[in-house]
Image (cartoon, rainbow, N blue to C red; front, side, top):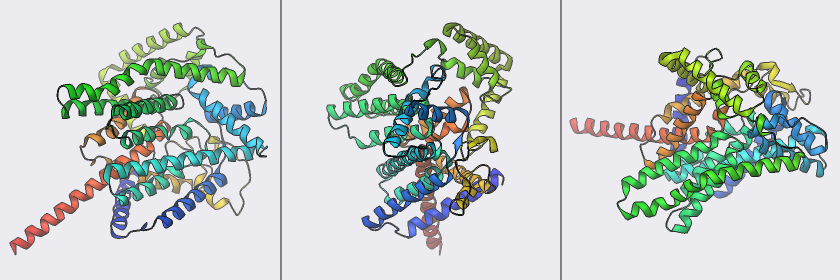
Length: 475
């Protein structure tokens, strides 16, 4: 289906869903809530275990390396000197594979399934944090439940859930930072410092799993600082900015310490030495992002170009030269066209690029289809005919979320959410374009959509009441 039709269906879906939650109280008892949460988690695990498969590309490399590291097999660690952002994920999944072996799950498939269940737990905790964020922002338990349900269908049972990669591990960090920000009240200096130090710590860990996670902290710092300046005067401004100033002073040394800790942990776990000369700088990814021929997506030529240059300083210098040359060739108008193309590419896929390579996306099917799992795989595997149904479902949800997010209120606590989305959009427009890079912010998009939808229908209801009052007065 075309996006216009899917957006209409998405808007209608959310309208009906909103009406149902407004009319009926589905969660009137705590016991029912607990039972529903347990059942939903069980369904999530069943779907994931029945649908899971081994992927190629970087996720496959990381997964196989983590398993080999856990069981003592050899592997090539040189990859991680170039792609340092995968170091921490490698170590974490290796620990999970090792734990699986210790509890008797010795085969690769069973150990992989154990890691998938861990992913499910991460996704589930993310959903609970999302639901609590919505409640803290709206005070509406129905919107809280609705947000959880939308997140469940759109994110929880996404096929990315059973891909062992940085996306699955990183999805919790942006919403966790937002939850900390909303949960800890700043009624004392100690609490204020604790709050901002906790967010800084989470952002450091998140950055070393998925770099764009740190955008949430940046957005919160900016919007909170502006709010402090607008709402306070004189000495009060200084008092309330002290925790933020402390965090800003700690940012550089904290991130350096974090990088040092990750590298040392990687070296200790793998028994190899990190080669800093192989590490790609941000200019490598910016160079890829400025490639007009590939619309700023990953391409082998640019990757080979950076790999070919062994000296890190020379590589960065050459990356900068290519970037300048490409900007010069594009000109202002060409640059704008590229940015539009990349924006559309990043936001045009509600599955976040799942299965883009079709049959080649799956390199290990693990097991044959059976009557017990074939009906699930029919919808969740890219090599099955029903996958298009799944793609249409998440696309209409995605377009509905994006539509309603434009109606979010201009409240200062909401502004950090919207600014983080703007920051993420700028990130994927400037650097390598990839719909998958949006998935760690999928919970934030859901929150924005729910907040906007709530405001949209509040406005609609007020106008309907006003119209009815006017109509009655005329009579």
